[in-house]
Length: 227
Length: 227
DNA sequence: GCACTATTCAAGCAATCGCTTGATCACTTG
DNA sequence: CAAGTGATCAAGCGATTGCTTGAATAGTGC
Image 1 (tube, chains in turn brown, orange, red, yellow):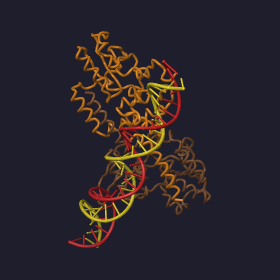
Image 2 (cartoon, each protein chain N blue to C red):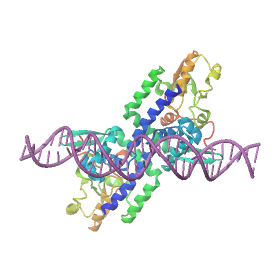
Image 3 (cartoon, protein in one colour):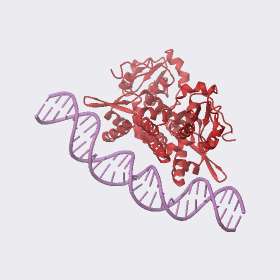
Image 4 (cartoon, rainbow over the protein chains, first blue to last red):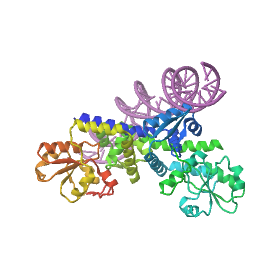
């Protein structure tokens, strides 16, 4: 009797721990973070996290066994995506808790930003009104697929790789605000550096689409995520 | 340049994973679940999870390094508690996600409950009104310390171990509702069985104090958690 | 059918993890 | 101060994990 109730506890907590295990490896958390931006193929993900394809595939299967992501075969490719909107919300809570509690994270990013002397990012609260009013030029510097999967209203899709070629098309009389995936994403940082080097007044928004959505602000999808 | 940004990502995601690692072992999750009920000493916890004291201590230190719990020396004892209210909220989200996504958990508990033929628990929504109106006798069958750390308003503290001795003091003309720590806690189940065997109309509430609080319903503390 | 690509599978190795045991430290009480 | 208790530390073990390498599978395009 006490033994069977112990058994139940063990299996229940063991299953809970399976969810924890899924989040217990750096590369896996990074994969999840990428997938929170939108669906992706395996070797796309592998490239982004800088791991071998085989290894990435294995990590993805761990995530799949924990029901955090799911895969769909599309011709040659296997497209992975988050298994449910709840996962995105939970992952946000996970990241937020870690950032709040583990000061090392804040330290590391602060040190990194200081080192790159990228002026402190403007926080969203102050910018939201101006962005929504269209007083600034808003750039989404993520890859086009992520832009397609959802972006801030009014944002222009200018992948950081293409930015140099498209500088001429940007109005010079307005401030430019660049954003990418979130506070740890450096693409917006690169963009701001490049813009400033060319005389633009440029700022970095340190939130991504997921943070934006978490605030209850609107997201636009130019294309359906899975039509 | 790309290398340093990789470095930042690695350290950030590695730190995030530290939080995941804390949640990646069954006993550790169980410890967290217990601590969500209220502060505890090490060997109290060790007994509850059925592990050696040394092992429990080590698990607690992993949780502490992840800043999920903190310890305070009190004379001979080390009292552990959750490090912040956010941790409790997050742990609730963690458990809820796991329950929703990992059907194995629901299966296991359902099978267990069926095996013990404990009639299905009454869900809170239907009972809340009657409990608040005081139409039923509400029993908190957890240990006294947990009752002291916070309990539902109007509940009587009747630890399951003492229940048999106190049956005579309970009114027989009203329904009895027993609760303990949550859906996986079997103390309320034992209590209901015992009550029914003695002719009471008894029901089990499958929520605990943390669920109750998460609903925004009131909690009473008879004693200050840390005076 | 053949070459090619994207992904998964299987085997292997070093590193880490979970638990145990026995010693040690910190504090209380006789 | 000695005895006793609660907790931590340190060493050691078997099991698991993370990554690599090389082969196998499934679908595409010639």
